[in-house]
Image (cartoon, rainbow, N blue to C red; front, side, top):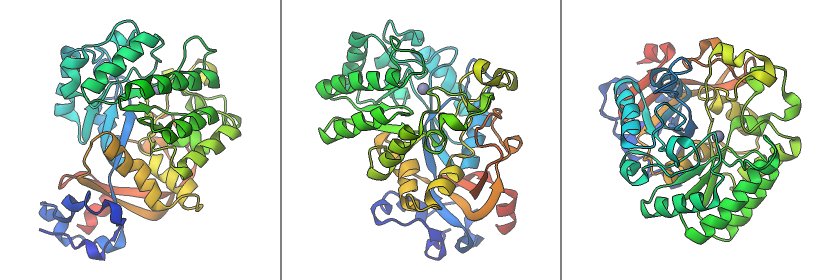
Length: 393
Ligand SMILES: [Zn+2]
C-alpha cells in the first residue's frame, strides 16, 4: 500500500527528500485508508542523549517505559548514556543492555559505550571490543579529567570511526560553575584539532561554550554540539525550591540563554537533545538542594520548542526538524526511516501524570504548549498510536 503524501501537510524541505524516500512506500496496510491531509507529518526525531536506567536502576526507568515515552514524543531513535550497572565498558556490560533492548524497546535504542572502565576516569574501556555494538563513546555524568587519557580515547575512537560524546566538566573547577564546562570544552577542542576524531559536546549551557564551539567550527575542527530545551527557555531566575529544576549542568543566566538561542539561529548549535534523566519521586522530592540531578524531557521537547521558538517566529519548523531529526541523523549515522504525526494546533497543559516515562519531574509541568503527538511509525509499523488517531484509521 502506498500513502498519498501529496495531500498531506508533510514537511518537505528539498534537502531531505532523498533521506525520506523510504517513507513514501510504507508497507503496512493500516496506512492506506488514513487521511493524512488533516495532520502534520514530520520525520520522526532522534535524541542523542537519554538515560533509560537499565540495567541497574529499573526503579527509576525501564527501557520499556523510556522507549514508550520516546515514541509518544515523536522519537524513533535514542542514544542511551552509560551510567548503568553494569557499565557498558566491556562486551558483557553492553550485551546485558542489548538483551533488555531487544526484549522491551519499542523504538531504536542505541547504547553509548563508556569511555573509561566503570566511568572511573582512570583506565579506558574495551573500546575495540564494544565498538561494533555502540553508537559512540561517552562518560556522561562526569568529565574525563585526565588529559592524556582523553587524548588516547580520541586516538582510539578515530581509528574505530566512532564519535566521542563528551560531558564536559573540569573536576578542578568549582562544581556547577560555568568555568567547569567551558574549560574542558576548550581543552577538548585543542585535542580534537590535533587528533581529528569525531567529537560532540553534550548539553552545552554557557555563552563561553557557544563562543568556543563557533570559533572551533570556523577553523575546521570536527565538532558538533547539543543543548536541551530547558537551557533555551529557562534561566536560574525561573527556578523554584523543587527537584524539578535540578539538573547538571544547572540553569544559567539570561546572557547564556541568549547566546544559546543565537547558536540555534546561526548553526553553532547542531541539535536539541533532552538529557532525559528520570529518578524516583523520593529522589526528586527533597527540594532543590537535596534532590538528584536530572529531569525528564522526551514527551515535552518538541511541544516546548515548537511553542517557544517556531510559534514565536524565532526559527522555522524546518530548522526545528533539522535540530531534532536531520542533524542528529547525519552526525550519528542513524538513517531516518520513520515519521511522526502531530496536531500542531492543539493547545494543552503539560501534565506529568500523563507521561509514559516513570519520571515525573519536569520544569515544564503546568506550562501551556502547542503540538500534540498522535502517532509515531517506525519502519512501517506504529510504535505509538493515540486513541484519537486510531479512530481515523
Ligand atoms: Zn551529562
